[in-house]
Structure formats: C-alpha cells, structure tokens
Image (cartoon, rainbow, N blue to C red):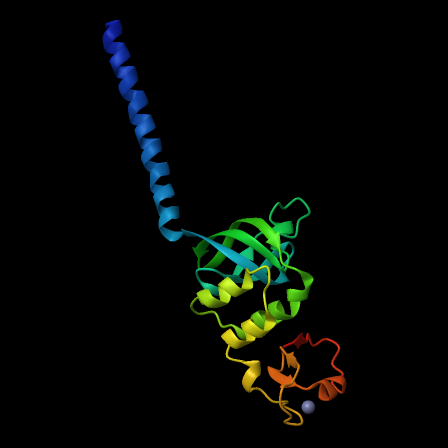
Length: 205
Ligand SMILES: [Zn+2]
C-alpha cells in the first residue's frame, strides 16, 4: 500500500526529527559541559613567579606568590615545550596576570607577563619560596613585592625579621648587615666574610 504524505506533513516530520536529534546532542554535550564546569573553578589573580621545577616529560610545577591567595604552587602542562606560549611568562622574577583552574590541585590556564623584577630582587624571591607557607594572603607583603623601589629591609620587617632589633647570630654584635635567607639569621660583616656557602643568597639589610 502506497503511503502518501502531504509535503507540509513531511516537512514537519523532518523538522521534528532534526529538533529531536539536536536536542539529544545538545542535552548530552550540555551535560558534559556542566559536569566539567562543576569540577573546575577558574581563578584570576596577579602573581610573582618564585620558583619553577620540571615535572615529567614536559610539565612544570611553579611556585607563585599571588595577590589574592598568598603562596601557591600550580602545574603548567607542556610548559617546557618550545612552542608553549606560557613558558616565557613563567620564569622566576616575572610579575604576571595568572589564570588558574582548581582540579585537585591548581593548574595554570594562562599567564601574561606584566614586567620582570630586577635581578637584585632574587634573594627576596629565594626567601619567599623558602619561608612563606601555602596559607592566606598578605596584602602588605604583596604591595611591597610589586614596588619598583622594593626594599629588602621592609620585606624582612613584614616577615617578622626586623633588622632594627637583630644582632649577629654568630658573635651577637649589634646592627648586623646581612641576612641569610636559607638559614633565616642575621650576621655581621666579619662573620659574613667567614661564611663560605656560595649557594646561599645574601641580603644587605
Ligand atoms: Zn658577627
């Protein structure tokens, strides 16, 4: 038996079929999309790169001091590949705009350099990587770190190592001129000259 369909009826049936297929696809994708969003919250902040370590074949783990979350460490996927646009922005001393997602730990999604801090700030970078814990932000410390006239003396004071009340950890003489970021002690100039660890970064406080 021949089944005849009016063109308009055929059109409506075709349209329904398309809508139902699209609806199905949309619902399915949407479900996946919402699932992804739910497990990945995105964050945006400014940060200073403190330290960068290799991880596996091409990934990096980067330690930051951030404006909003204090010290954090985050994974950069494929950041060591030459083609990675992230790579150049994740060198220590870089002051950057940072975007992250939290998926278990933090993962870097984007980084754009604002400027590079001067090489003279490196001992402070070593100090922050060494001393600050992964909890809470410190706006006073952040404000000092991004000043163009950053002062080691002020940073040490904010961190509770005020030079004014310090004495040499070796000979107890007053007004010691040097702070050892890894040992977290002040030493005077004569004691400093006896200090033979070449790896230790030193600050004139
Ligand atoms: Zn001394």
